Every structure is written in structure tokens, then in C-alpha cells.
Amino acid sequence: MAAVVLVGALLVGCGSGPAAEQASAPTAEAVTPAVGKVLPTAWERLAASADRLDPAQGYPRSVEGGASTWTTKPVDDWTSGFFPGQLWLAHTLTKDPAWVARAQRWTAPIAGQVTRTDTHDLGFVVGDSFGEQQQQTGQGAQEVVTAARSLATRYSPAVKAIKSWDTDGDDDKRGSWRFPVIIDTMMNLPLLDQAAALPGGDPAWRDLATQHARTASTTNMRPDGSVAHVAVFDPDTGAFVKRDTWQGADPESTWSRGQGWAIHGFAEQARVSGDPELRAAAVKAADWWLAHTAPGARVPSWDFSKPGEERDTSAAAVAAAGLMDLGRQTGDARYRQAAVETLDELATRDVAPSGPALLAHAVGGKPQDSEVDVGMVYADYYFLEAVARAS
Image 1: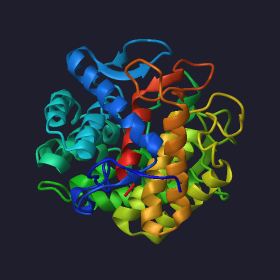
Image 2 (image 1 turned 180 degrees about the vertical axis):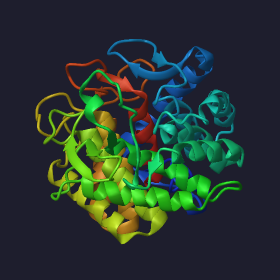
Image 3 (image 1 turned 45 degrees about the horizontal axis):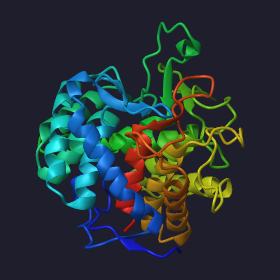
Image 4 (image 1 turned 135 degrees about the horizontal axis):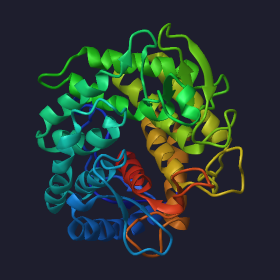
């Protein structure tokens, strides 16, 4: 492993899961010199954006190549929680109290999202903002519980999963998917786990989250460990209908960020639940990833069936955070090593030379869509989360 640099006290499970699942922070953590070198740049850019921008005017989402400011989205966008989440991670990593005030300023407006029942993305939105606030300060429990209650309304006992998208009447391919479950929803389950342990929460929410993960592990995941973006169900009978795709090149391909969601999400739920089936699912997803990346090339193309096309730093950052978690759970050094190699590659090759985002070369959608080869708020978020988990 590369030489190391100490970057400060880190929180083991940062950014995910209930506070009861967090281990106490070690006094220091080792990361590669390249990662240590870019962290001051991360803090400088993050602080400048937090202080200059106004959450009432929108939340940072993406940065086109060469742009000097973020493209923002309204607070109801699925990505709104990542920017306050980065601010909470900055506090975790630096212990500088100035980050708390910034994080609280950007977290507070998200309170209006907690009663939404029209989206599965409440974990991304509320978990990464109020969830982190609750873990770090004790404040925000009511928002976390309310959001979890809202998310739980989307669970179907027949399907044994949370409905990801409301598609009825959509005038596109998704309109035929009566009950779609996308792999991304795995990342929203920690909100349920966290809320289940809080005053006013329902302990059954943790069982609901675990059951959703079990369903996804046999429907979204293929036998070889690769992952399909969408699993489609009959909402009346609960029967699994087919695998399909929205992101990704085609139904049989493997969208790289989706594979990252699977590693991260199954590892997370395995840690919370202790379910050996979910740990096995995380291992399958991770082993597939390791078999299709290599040292020096840990950042994959946006879809594994499209080698040589646009690399996706967001997929790599998500996977690195999940691999760190899985390595700790299993004691298998391969996972941590791959995560460290990924962080080192990102820090060496993919830091944006200027602008407000830390990482460049993320892919938000398909190459024919927008947000290709850009800075993305969630790429930066998961990069910092992976650093925080490197303990």
C-alpha cells in the first residue's frame, strides 16, 4: 500500500446508518499522499460555495467543464441533500466548528421535504442532511422520523419492496413499469434504519429496509453479481416480471454507478441487519466490480459494456465508500485495497483544475443526455465519505 498521511479524526460509518451503528472516531486515519494533498482544495472550494451561494436560490448539482459556478436545482431535487452532507463530512474530517454553522444553514430548508410521499429519494435528501445533523449534534430527529414515515408509505407487502418511481401515465418507457424498483433505492434504506432507533420511530422500519434489500438482491442482481438498474414487479401479485434499464446502455449491460450503489447499499444493510444473505450480496457485487476494474484503472466507464467511453468518477467514489465498509465487515483486505487505489486514482487524475467541484469527469446520465464529463455534487460527497470510512 502507498505511503500514508494523517488527516484527522474520522467517523467510521459517516454519512450512513443509525447513530447506534457508529463506532467511536479513531484519533487519526491513513490515506494516500495524493488524497491528503487534495483535501485542502476540497475544503477551500466547499467553503467558498457554502458561503457565497444561497440555498433559497437552489442547491449545487453539477459543474460543466470550465464553469466557475454550480448549476443548481430546487430543494426538491433528489440531489439536494448531498451539499449539506458534504458540509457535515467536512466537520467530521476536520473537527472545525465553522462547518457546523454552514451545514445547519444548508440543512434547514430541507425540512419542507420530509412529508413527501411521492419519492423514494428521501434518504438522499433527508438522510444526508438531517440524518447527519442528528448523528453529529442530536438535532433533527423529528425530521428524520417524519421522512422515514413518509418513505415507508411506498413499501408494498406484496412486492416486499419500496416503489421507486410513480410511473402510471408517464408517456415514456417507464409508463409500462407498474412497480419499478431501481438499485438506487438501496441508498435510501439507511434513513429507515436510523429513524427506527429514534424516539417516535417504528422499529419495524428496520425490518422493512432489510426485506427490501433481500428482494433487490435476487431481482436487481444477476446471478454473476452484476446489477440491473430496474426490477419490474406486478403490484397486485408481487410477482417479479423482468429486469430492465433506464440508466445504462441496455437492459443486459451494467451501469457503473448502479453497481456502485449495490456494493454500498448491500454492505450498509448487511452491517445494520447482520443478515448474512445481504453480506453475501455485497460480496458478489464487490467481487464483480474488482474483476472488471484494476489498479490504475479503478474508475470505470459510465457503463461497463462501453469500455473506452466516458469515465464516471461518481461511480468510482460510490464504490470506494462501499468497499471501505465491506472491507471492515469481512476483514478481506482486497476491498479496502481497491478502495484506497480508487481514492488515489481520483485524487491523482480527476481533481478539477478549477471551479467549485472537487472532482471532474462524472457522468450524471447517458452520454446522449446532459451532465456528461462534469463535476457532480454526489461524486464529491462519496469521495469524502470514502475518506471518512478509511479507518
